[in-house]
Amino acid sequence: MYWFDFNYLMYMAPAILLSILASVYLHSTFGYYKNVLSRRGMSGGEVAREILDSEGLYHIPVEVGSGFLSDHYDPGRKRVVLSPEVYQGRDIASLGVAAHETGHAVQDKEKYPFLVFRNFMVPMASIGTNAAFFLIMLGFWIRFSGLINLGILLFGAYVVFSVITLPVEFNASSRALKILGERHILDGDELKGTAKVLFAAAMTYVSAAITAVLQLLYYMTLARRRD
Image (cartoon, one colour):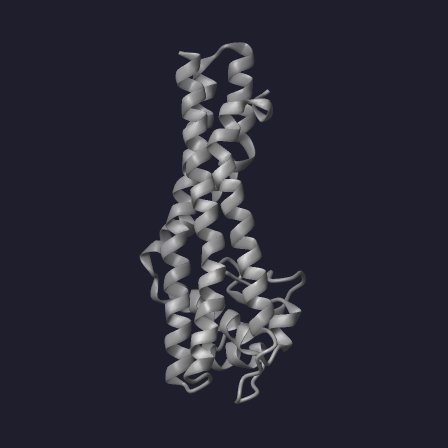
């Protein structure tokens, strides 16, 4: 089985280590700046609402979700969902995350090309992550290379999705920092701290993309060994 394959460990060990480091970095950075209150005293929910209104996005609600750092913009239902600690938080970490998610809403409004393409890739990426492994393993079991290649192709769609996510996330963060500064929601050293939080969050997407690429390379190596 592939999870006992030494070659798999050689491909994935660096990615696993990077993912762990990215997660630790995010939690430690967010935890540190969660204790730094903003001078204006606004909450994450208030910041999200102010930015959306300033962009004419009055119709997009700001809702409270559940789960730690579960914040996201839902392009299907056109809503910004903030975790309770971010929605209620008056610290610079929470304000940065809230502004970042509204950045995605602005991208959606402007039809930001990378976001449009990422949304288009969602169905295929979902299928790729759920079906690729089983198709590849089944292909090996019944000795049918067509299934193996199909699994690799589907997983490739997930890799494209992971890579195209990077400019979407970095652009949303740059938008957030620009708006927070221009509207004087955060100033000077506050913006520097928020930038560190958003960079730490972006690193989790970078590690996910690297992991996906390495896993695809492993699957392709398996296919070549099969031939």
